[in-house]
Amino acid sequence: MHTVSVGGIDIPALGFGTWQITGRTCADMVATALQAGYRHIDTAAIYENETEVGQGLKAGGVDRDAIFVTTKVWRDFLAPDQLEKAAEQSLKRLKLDHVDLLLIHWPNADVPLKGSIEALNRVRERGLTRAIGVANFPSALFDEAQGLSLAPLVTNQVEYHPYLSQQRVLQAARRHGSSVTAYSPLARGKIFGDPVLESIAKAHGVNVGQVALRWLVQQPQVIAIPKTVTPARARSNLDIFGFQLTDDEMDRIFALTRAGDRLVSPAWGPAWDKDEG
Image (cartoon, rainbow, N blue to C red; front, top):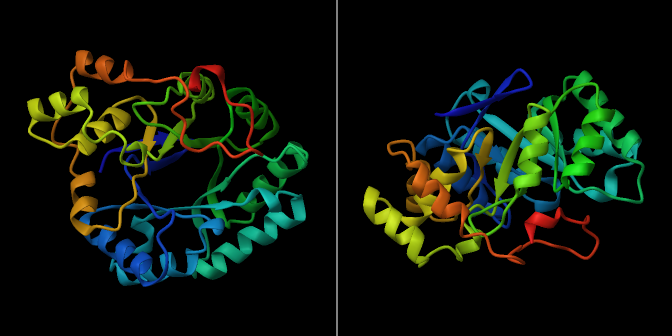
């Protein structure tokens, strides 16, 4: 498995996302993903599936030390004492003594960032997580968070796919030797049928989803976490390391960016970087 090295840890470049996968389906899909070869599993408290993810981790038959587990603290619990308690509760649901990466899921302008980052560092110092990071942070806020943190923030997990530019976020991550983790990497299915992606896929004998995922992980310090409830699709998404896109193909995909093609933009979210649409 291709990995991204950052902050002294190796993160598998392709993970299995679990947003909106719940109940027995979630547990079964996590186990199936592990058996297919995934070694990076992503969840969050707000997904309400950490218990089932934990069940899937146990049923997957893979040693815990070989699995990279990410979870996230929701924006309502970023006050320092709440953040630490939220991390503890996530571990109880997952039935783990630590996760590999703990993220602040979304920024919250009503809670001072300094206290949240200090609490995130304390969780790491207590051994409840190997590494820390954030999600949905615009570039300037990511710069600020890195400046407040004693430990490196190893990733900024954001929406990223062929139709949404994240150049400013990518540049900020690279300034700090960090990474970007792409959620909704297939634009929730909107990429399927795209003539540019179809053409590139045909040239390599692969499918459009594989092209989009390959485009992401072929970029320096980029990780992708597609999700699916179909075992065959999960295996297909993982099978992206047997081909490489040319520079021209990479550029053709970068050129697909469309202004305003952001899929996730809650009213309480941050002000996005201008290049992101």
